[in-house]
Amino acid sequence: MKLGILKGFNDFEEFTKGSEFYAKSCEELGIDYEIIDFTSSDWIELIKSSDCYGFLVRTPCNIQERKSIFDERLYFLNKVMKKPIYPSFDEIFIYENKRNMSTWLKLFGFPHAETKVFMTKEESLDFINKTAFPLVFKTNIGSAASGVKIVKSKGQAKRIINNIFGIRPSLALGNLHFLKKFGLKIFPNIGEAQKHYVIIQEYKDVKWEWRLIKVGKSYFGQQKLLKGEFCSGSGLVGFVKPPDELLFMLKDICDKGNFDSMAVDILETKDGEYFVNELQTTFGYEKEDSEMYIDGIPGRFTFQNGEFVFEEGKFNKYGSSLLRVESFVQKLQELDKINNFNK
Image (cartoon, rainbow, N blue to C red):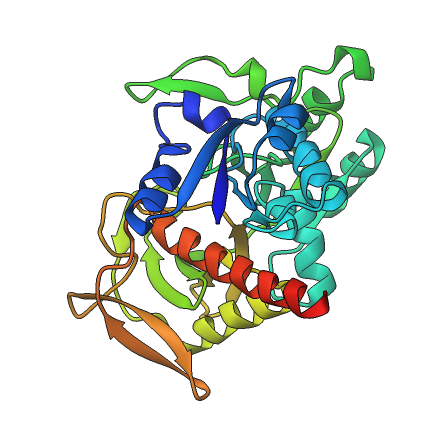
C-alpha cells in the first residue's frame, strides 16, 4: 500500500513541518509513500500518474484564499476522483472555517457560544444596536486567537463593520489585524483581511479552555490556560485529567461527524458551563512527547466497555502524525476488505 503526501503551503512556512512529519511517520512504519505538490497547476496529472491508494493532507490555516482553493481541490480529489484522503473531507471542510463550524455545531445541537454570520452591513449594524457588549468578532480563518477581537463598545464594533463592508464592496478595506514585532503593532496584515461578511459571537466569561483530542482509537485531554484575554495561543498548558463529561462530549462529536482526527476546544466558564469553541482536524503539540500527562505520567485513553481507560505511554510522535498514518492505514485496509468482498 502506497500513500500520497500532499505538499501544500505549510511546507513553505517556518512554523509548521508540513509534509515532513507524514514522511517520517511513513518511514518509521515501513510504508511506501510519494510526495505530491498539491499547489501545482498540474495537480490532476500528478495525482493520476501516481499509484497511491490514499492521500495524507495538511491544509493551510492562515490565508482564506489558500484554504478555499485547497478545499476545492480536495473536493474533486475525494468526491469526484473517489480517492481516499485523511483527514476526511468533512473534517477538513469545517477546519479553520468558523462559518461552517458554527453551522455544524448548531445543526447537531452541541453547546457553543451563539454565533451570527452577517452578509450585509445593514443587518450587522442593526444587530449591534440591539445587543449588549462585550461581543467577540472573529475572522473566518485564523489559529491561536489571531483575528479574534473582544469588542467592548458600539463605536468599535461599527468601525470594524464599516471596514468589512466599506462604503461599497469595491472599497472595502476589510477586518484588519496588525502584525507584531517585539510586542508592537508594526504594519497591517492586508493580505489576510476579511471582507464582505462579519462573524459575531456571544462573549463568555472564561475560566480556561480544555483541548480534547481523538486520533483513531486514542483520546487525550489537556487544559489551555488564560494569558490575558485568551486561552488559544497562550502557550500555557495544564496537564490534568479531563472530566469524563468532556471525554464523552468529544466521543459524541466524533461519532456524529464520523471524525477520526479531531481536536475539540471547549470553553469552561467561571460558572462551570461548557461550550465548544473550535473543531480542529489539524493539530499537534510538537513540544511534548505526549498530548496528555496525568499525575506526571504520559499516556492516552482508549474507550473500552463503555468507559475511558488510561494507558501509559508516549503517543505524540511527530505531532501526532504517526497516529494519523496508523489510523489511515487501518481505514484503508478495512476499505480494501469491503471492496474485495463486494467483487
